Structures are given as C-alpha cells and as structure tokens.
Image 1 (tube, one colour):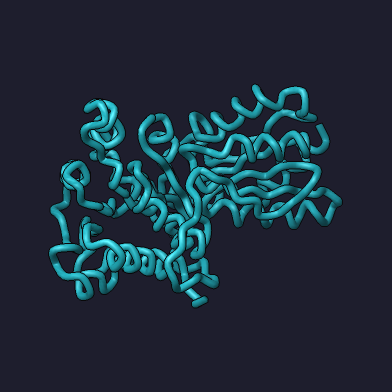
Image 2 (cartoon, rainbow, N blue to C red):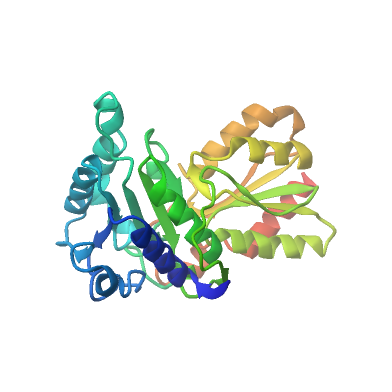
Length: 325
C-alpha cells in the first residue's frame, strides 16, 4: 500500500496500464510535458515517449474523433477532455460514433477500447464553465459505460477496469477531490468491477445513495442522522451506466426509504431514473416518497456556489422529512 491522493492514483493507473500494454496511449490538451491542467498525466511523456503521450489541438470533437479511429483500428486510447464542461463539442462523436460503432457495423468494428477521462463537478470556485456535472446526458446512450470514483483506491481500480473493458467508457473524475481525498492504494495492478455499487455503510432505516464527491456528503449526513437515532445505509453507485439496480433495490426493500444525492441540477438528473426504477420495483416496500437532494435548476453560480451545493445539511434535513413522513 501507498498513500496517494486521487490524482496520484489516476496517474498510477495510467502508468500501470501503459506498462502492461504498449497499445495504450494517452492524449488530450496539455497532457504531455505539462502533465495536464491538474497534473494527472505528469511524467507519462517522459516515461513512455511522445508517441504514446502527446498533446492535441484544442478541439474536443477532434480529440474524440481521432480516438474513435484509433480504437476501431486496435489501439487502446485514453483521451482526456480537460473539463467535463467542454465535452459537449464532442457530444456528436461520443453519441453517434463511439457508442454506436459496434452496433452500426454489425460487430465488425468497435470503439470498445476507448476510455474518455474528464474532471467534473464544482467545489473549486470554477464558475459556470468549469463546474458542471454532465453525467446524465450520457446515461441516455446505449453502447457505453459511465464510471465515477469516490476515492483514490476506487479511482485506480476502476480506471484500470475501464481501460481494459470491452466497451467504451466515460470515466468522470470529481475534481474537488483531486488533492483533498487521500488514502491507501495498492501499488500493484488491480481492478474493481464496473457496474457494481459499493456498500459503504450498513443501516436499517433509510438508504442514502450518491456517487463521486457526494458520497462524502451523504456520509456526513448519515453521521448527523445517527445522533438522532436514524440508522442510514450508505451506497456509492460507482457506475452510472450500467447502474446496480439489484443492489439498490435490495437495500431499499430492507430500509423502506431512499434518498438520492447528486450535484447536477434536479430536473432530468440521473436521480430521476433511479427513483422511477426503484418506485416500479419496490413500491410495496416504500414507507415514504423517494427523496432527491440535488443541485439547483440554474447555471452553476460562482458567488453562490455554497448555496447551490447539495451539502450534508440539506441532506440531513431531507432525511428528517423522509423519516417523519
């Protein structure tokens, strides 16, 4: 084991993957000698050369189009989109090419070896263009996976699984945890399963569900709830697409209550999909309406970032409302 922050764990995963498979290459804006805007790709170019870690022009559509071509011809590209907010110029390539190439070609070609890394979310005073959480946009696309780690150990294991998975993966990294989250990470090669939720804490009165940086938020709210006698089960979804329906529903059938927390705006957020599925499958077990504690339906504010965030206090109040229903 070694103490790493989230950035170091991601860097370790990339080094591990590139060492293990010479077909793995990393590219994006400023990822080369500069090491990326957050330094996630530090020293990769020095270690593996400019042919396997290199800068691209500032064109997200071009980055993913290029990555699609590489993946379809047998390479294992790891493409970085510098901020999740700037993934939208590449939306057409991801939706209509990355996710559909295998289906469109009847299995003759695939972009399954492509992994797209991008930091997402707020909490760093980045304002409206560097703080968005766009995961729900991509959860509507059959043909790809979406993975979001919550800590360094998850980040390394899930990223290695993503790079080696036979499907294109959008790997979203909560940027506010890059240097804030530190923990023990195995130095050796290891993988964590995609599409599986992680039971962080067992409880009996209410299920709290989140992913990425918001897992820490629901853990804080759960600790507050414990002080007033409410036992909370805490689950980290880890994968948005596919998501672990069975694990979530099993928990809800046990507790009878569900609260979903995500940083993205409420309307059309992925909590809506989870709530609809759980209502359909667990209706007779529910003791109260499913609660959603999410970001506001407004562009991400700079001056009012604290008010926007679905923090532990908002979550705690929602827990009390749900329990008192």
